[in-house]
Image (tube, rainbow, N blue to C red; front, top):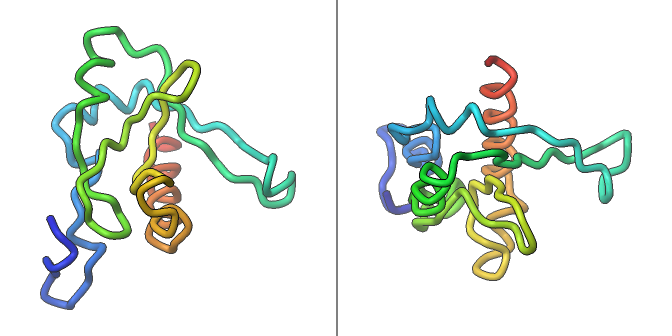
Length: 122
């Protein structure tokens, strides 16, 4: 969906398709892990990273190819990404080299909170 699509109340973010809308989400979520990342926020205000761990190779190949909307601008992105070196992680926004503003905004923060609540509920 593009940012031009809106719900009846005019909300742009409400109509975004996230990884949680994907048919494989019930299976994929089993491999998502919350990690506290306090390097830039300290112990009082840590950030959370969402790592994707121990995916079977066939599922990893599919996961990397999944598309979803950036929760901030609506651009189609790959929300499961390979980390330089090793591993995979979840990012609901455009890559930093595409648009750093997407990752720093309210929509990104809200999506991480929603994802944390979803993962904590397992």
